[in-house]
Image (cartoon, rainbow, N blue to C red):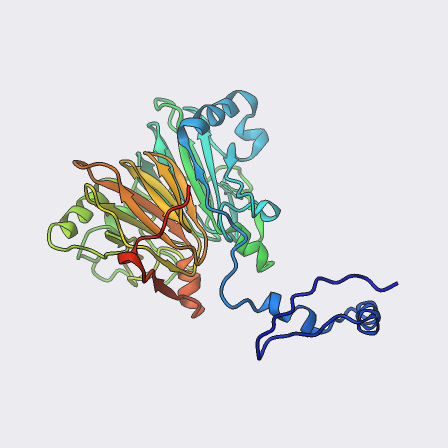
Length: 374
Ligand code: 1HN
């Protein structure tokens, strides 16, 4: 009895269009026994005309999530859990625990005085602080102190541990990692530090003080690793830079005033697989719609508004996180007539660019505005 196979026929020249017959179905069954298949039964599916994202647009509302995240403080310890994290589970990507595309993200919470084991892995990460005081991260002996809207890199292969100083307050932050991507590449290793915790062997915040000065490089500074030596990017400097740029530029009609965080030694992305940017939307600004390849996870660092993604409206406010899947139309609106809004964005753009897969398109109709349904 021949198996039914999914038929993806298209009546277009150059595309597969073979009708099922009892003889062919029997043939497919025989092929299957040899662990092979006829390409024309799957060609149209595996070579779509344009990217087909499995991810769906989602807004994770902080107002709803915060209490759930805090509850985990009572339910598990970092010792038992490894990391006390509530992860963002995109309904289309549950199989790989991704927030969008090949990006993982979660909300991690820690009490003052807690320390999470030092470890390292092939995945790269950023930690973007949402609330609380006293958070710090140690990366390969460099300690970085962290406040709201600061973020720290924990690049692949680096020993890293997170903690909150005893005199601090409960801290919540967003983790963002390339785990699903590294797993898809079947290249992920994980190691726990033999001493569970590593020594701090450099002056506190030295990497940002050394490499984070606009327009200035340390004389003789030599950095050849594949990630930024500036392990921490601070919110105040970022916000100031955005305002400086906004004071003399209209920015982009699609992105507003957007700046990418860079590796100061190369001006390339902060890490090989993960890119980060902060964009400022001026009061009342409504960007034009466009789409591009790559997966994007936005974190509302400041303000409130909404985004229209594939023709549907998603409202957001400060601390909400939302995703824009690859090749989805999107435009952003700052709801305030008096205040700016700032969106932090984590993406896999460095992968798209490095592999020659980046592509973008403007929404041509209606002055770049999508028709909105719901
Ligand atoms: C990790 O290292 C962290 O360092 C957070 O805080 C989440 C999820 C999977 C694997 C490693 C962290 C993680 C993770």
